Image (cartoon, rainbow, N blue to C red; front, side, top):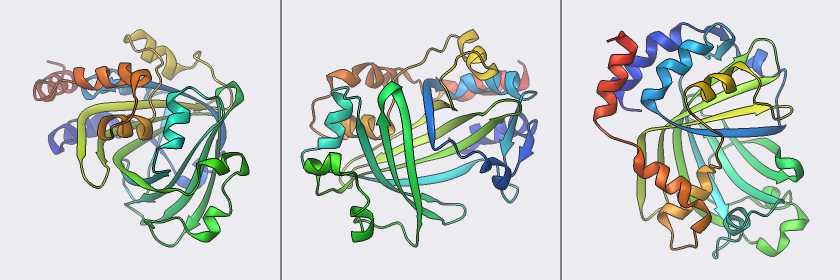
Length: 266
């Protein structure tokens, strides 16, 4: 998110009561149901106002907006990407993720399993590596052996707000300022927001889902990795055309004015 827009959101983000990382990690939601929505930055003021009474916000060291950098791995022919594109029920993402504000790095495997659930495993690592270590290769599921070896294919950067429901096991993450780099080409979407509901069991009955529906947003498929590969690599991407079209519709400069009007109540 551009500096002007981030500053305009500060009063809205500041209205939330803070929750610490220690409190957040009491319930890790590593095995969960995910529901995603694609928004624009000028959709955020109404959503944040709706949720301030029912959600807390993650705060660490006085910060509420956190920067992430993730390196994804795949085969030379993008075998893991193709599993996602082709709608296979059992699919895998492999990555190193760095939390830029703290410097912490994790090796993560995110596996989509039956009933649209996500099973996520993460282990602390010393650096943001550009190659998978032997120890991490040994952790990869045998079911995906035909898709090995894996090499780095995409770097994704963004900033995140994490909202935590006061009464139910539910988080809403809001990812802003999305940027892609495949180490030869790049693309960025400063006016895009990816909202993701993370729950024990998929439900659209909570306050966040109700607010999103009320403002005209519907659940959609959106994988940051898959969309980045579809954008930057010469791969089949028919099944991701709705996502790519949504990106094309994200407007540019006039959103800053729209956002300012909503925050100031103009």
